[in-house]
Amino acid sequence: MATTHSSSDTSKAAGGLTTFAGVLLFIAGVLDLLRGIMGIVEDDVYVSTPNYLFKFDLTSWGWLQLLLGAIAVVVSLGLFTRATWARIVGVGIAGLLIIANFLSIPYYPFWSIVLIALYAFVIWALCVVRRDP
Image 1 (cartoon, helix red, strand yellow):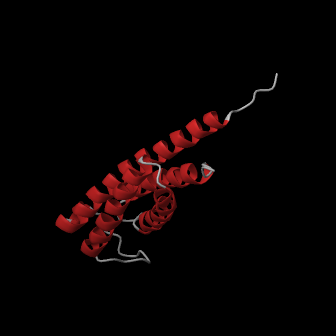
Image 2: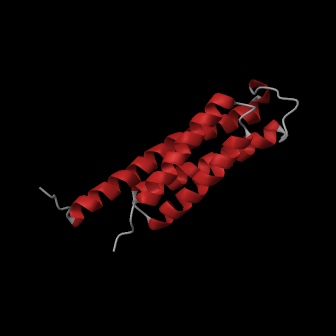
């Protein structure tokens, strides 16, 4: 027996995925905010990797993480209102944060990998949702 999907079912699923992305983006953004604060206040909490190709001043890196995390939190609030701009910016900021967390793997490996996975789910959830007609 074939089932038919109404447009309200599709709309509910799209709304659920957008909310899912908003919650994940909010949580991951707060984690990046906290990581940024750690880098600014006391950068010796990070692992020292002398032979890593991408070397950064960890205080500057903390400011970058703080800024990107704050943007992620603001965009997540826009996702809760189902704003189209928030979906577009959400994909972009999640992509930038994946790159930022990749570059910081040697300094804080476990959290970097966890955040990369969270941001990948955010991108997936925002990209599979179709635009409202």
